[in-house]
Length: 162
View 1 (cartoon, rainbow, N blue to C red):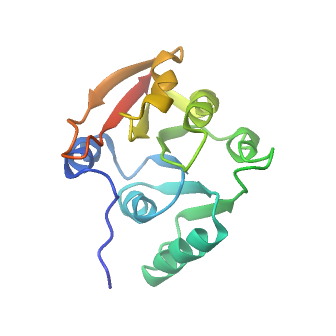
View 2: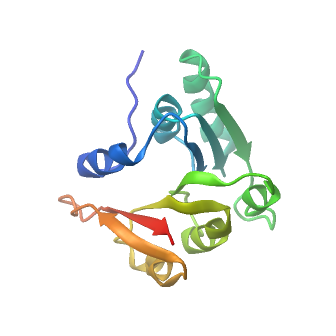
């Protein structure tokens, strides 16, 4: 069986690992190998994916590993209801939210803040992308860690809800 790890920089993986524990609940904007990684390190993972084909591939990985702590949600990114699943989870607050979906990252980040527990962490992958710099201006969030860019410039930023 293939060993899966997030498609983040190695430094980003090392940076995020100490923030996690088995009691945490995670929400991911975008699924993939990080879904498997989180499922093994935390209590429960909800993941919102925009591609049905990719979601099916991730579902296969989940089944192969007998993981029963992942809920997969699929929404078309161009539809008006793409942002609704996290908002509809009225009774849920998350310890960790990963913003790593294909599009609309600043909007996803902003809409996620009310769903993040106080002192919870929000991960913004590819935070070097100028298009997503608006996330750094969102109230009640502070940067607590940031990976160094890899040779391609890719990096991750960790925010905490204050």
